[in-house]
Image 1 (tube, rainbow, N blue to C red):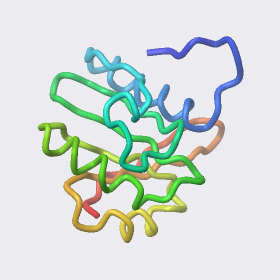
Image 2: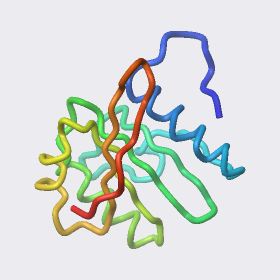
Image 3: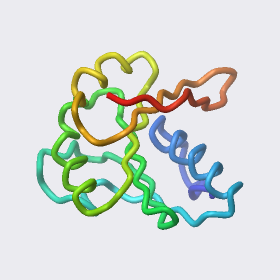
Image 4: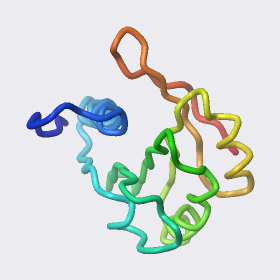
Length: 127
């Protein structure tokens, strides 16, 4: 899965592309959308990207560097109530903050970081 190369990719777009590549390797369809396309309102930070895969019904939300993890509590609850499996992709240096902000929500956290110009992912964690 590749994003259009019309302009340099931001950090969230690079993470989205790396996650999309994983789904492509698994031969699963995935699309990148704005979180507000799935959940309107609820204080969703503007420009929050997520990846949606239908098999299984999965949403992977990319927490941007400047967003408050607790702002995703409402969207996670709505998506979970609709039957989605939700993972929040978190910059590794903000993983502790994400655990605190999302404690008790029905989602998974997965750290990401950039090393040698490649996006890497940690294991799944429960907040």
